[in-house]
Image (cartoon, rainbow, N blue to C red; front, top):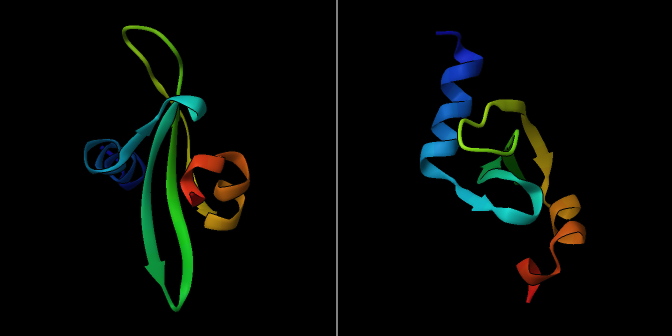
Length: 69
């Protein structure tokens, strides 16, 4: 299994599922910046990983207003 797949599975196992984004997020902190890992999935019983990457928390706050309340 590749490091990419292992890291994505780790986010899915330890992260938070966000229904509005159909994926999992896991908050990260590195060098004083606020980021999160995101794993997007297909919908359905046997979902597959469609995307995995590190993103800025500011973008997440704009997408999910409940996050900043």
